[in-house]
Image 1: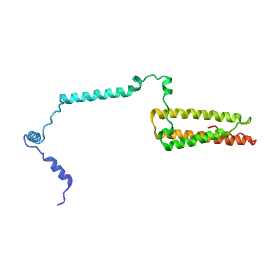
Image 2: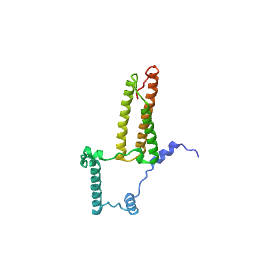
Image 3: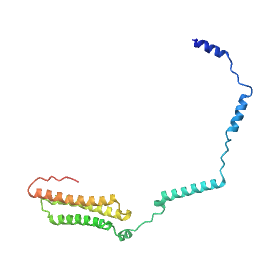
Image 4: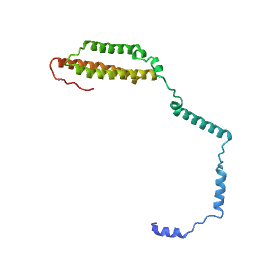
Length: 190
């Protein structure tokens, strides 16, 4: 029963397998009848017109979107800008008005308490210059709030500005007290 596999392959190679006559033609004929013929896709005029209309609409929209600032910008006079009242935190909500009033009252209170002396004049001038910078930034943020409307980032920036101004005045008071007692000036820049 055991046979050498090499002998089996040799005998198998000697037999020639031949296909019946017209086998390939019959196979292709059966294949064509079993599978549907692929039809070419044709575009109707309506589909082409709709595509062109969509393309023109998108192009026009993109043109308007990207050129809106260039073509529609109207020069604004300085007098017109000052006529627009800027919004503050109090205009956004009553709760924010309380926060703004708290910080502004404390800032004004700290400023009223401080009396510069000859020793602390330079220190006061430096801090007041920084306060003026923060006031200018607060006004710019208020104008941006008016222009773009309230959002969380803008409200936080305005509150942070008020906090920085108050903290700046607290530091000024501490350093002025240190200088008044004859201590060294250990001012830090903001």
